[in-house]
Amino acid sequence: MVASLYPYIPSINPYFFPVGVDFKWYSDGLTKFEINPMSIFDFLGGSRPMLIIFLYVFKSLFGFGVKEAVTFFPIILNTLFTLSIFLFVWVSFDNIYLASISAFFASMSFKITVNMYSYFLANMTALILIMYSLVLMLVYYKLKSKYALISALIMYNLALLTHPWTYMQFSISIALMLFLQFIKLKDFKKFINEYLAFILMFTPSIPIVIIFIPFGVNQFQIFLNTIKAMNLSSLFNFWFNSLFASLLLYGGFQMNIFTLLTAFLALLYPSTGFGEELLRFMVIASSIPYPFVDGMLQSRILFNLPMEILSSLFIYRVSSSELISFKMRSSIFLLAIVSQLNYLFRCLANII
Image (cartoon, rainbow, N blue to C red; front, side, top):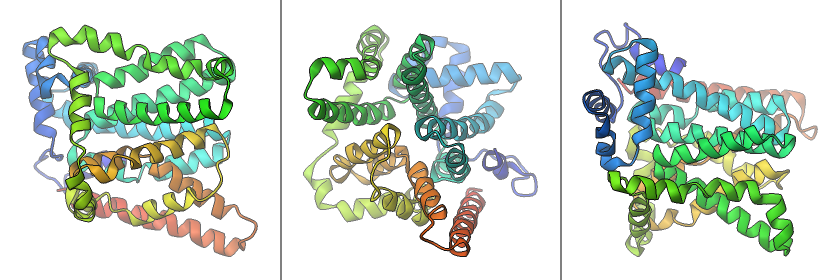
């Protein structure tokens, strides 16, 4: 919430200029929706109709104008995102301390700063929907609650109509994980019994896509165009694209060296459960197309990765290790906090 309000402090932004590169797109889309609701199928090629509906509901609930609704929507998004990280880690690892650490560092992550710089409202909303759907799916496996399963299916597939690229990245990652689990089990019946709920997550996507085609929303075409964007020329320009994605795009906010380094180190530890397996497959599956796309797509792939959770996992393991002295553990934890606070406010100060 602090990150969402900081750029609008009167002493910093006395004229209340909107921040965020994509602010105008969402402002125009919401304005057109109020005039003609069917315009959501024309907004940005019809790729994200649900986002405009969410914005309209937010605007109506609080009585905002269009400008205020788009301006303050990140307050809701950033808060819900941080809470989703807390719940996902808590349910996955059954460790409320680790969940608290993860939520704390997620609130200062490059998802927050890049979102404020670029106003990736659709991308963030889809991430939130998917994270909550995964939380509900894990709750279903623990409690066998059909309400949790139905809610998970609805939320996951709403992401398809909010930001299809994020939906595709997570779906491919989950599909790869399921495929390898099937190979490991070598028993189709046992595989279906254990992972049917996850398989069902993808089932509504096909009728959803077919239903919305007459309205000009063709998610199949979006997926096809994304696949076509992969080519060998991007591989030959890998380092240029990577530097462009991390150092130039979004003010260089994605180059959070501490988060990226500690997230990588977390991957060197052996996996401790299903939740961590899912995080690892997100990184593995996303690493396959990464060298074959341009810098812009590389940046979006990186944006969706759960780096803040992996980084927090490493910090937690190091700070609770008995092989390291208490003084050193405390110093490492303090370094993490100070470096991320410095990163957060340095980025926010450069948005205006």
